[in-house]
Length: 108
Image 1: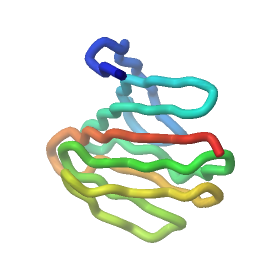
Image 2 (image 1 turned 180 degrees about the vertical axis):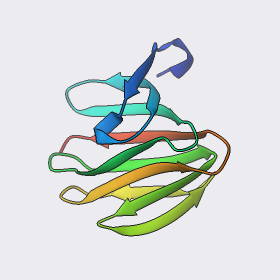
Image 3 (image 1 turned 30 degrees about the horizontal axis):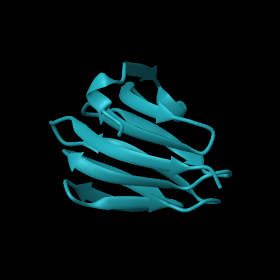
Image 4 (image 1 turned 180 degrees about the horizontal axis):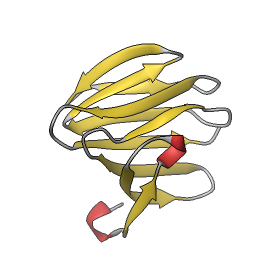
């Protein structure tokens, strides 16, 4: 069991070259990263390449603008963004409320 409420909240300024401070509770081992991440309005990651992993991002609350290879997707709670290995993506918190996501990044 992974209890994110018992995992230290880490602040990641300008995470992946983005803006603001991403906050995350992260479970990490040599095969996978599983994270609960919080972005405040305007916070983002820059577009970045997943060359050794894919990433699955499930929106728990808020609104996200994701790009996948430059194509824009707008997601809200209950929707999922998938970035396959070998592709680029980014995420931005859209709107006036924080964005909370659950991210799974398996090494491949």
